Length: 67
Image (tube, rainbow, N blue to C red; front, side, top):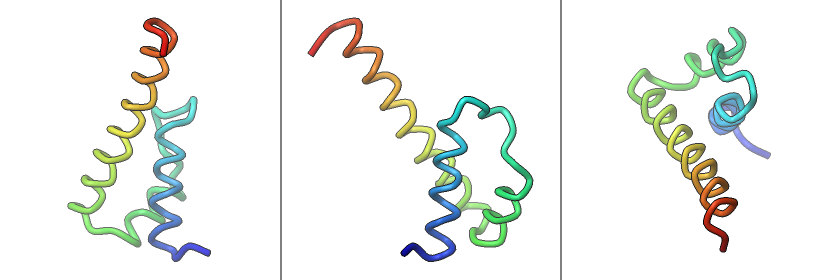
């Protein structure tokens, strides 16, 4: 359903949101480097990180502050 570039981006987003985010799998790194330029990788990292932060902050706010 998704092309290789989109699948690579989705794999990155998933890897950045899981419990083991301190080391990306070497196979994912190779997949990403094959699909994206360095500047594109930097943008992907920032977008995935911001989305993850928004979700986690929203979850904490809902629990602490309510709806």
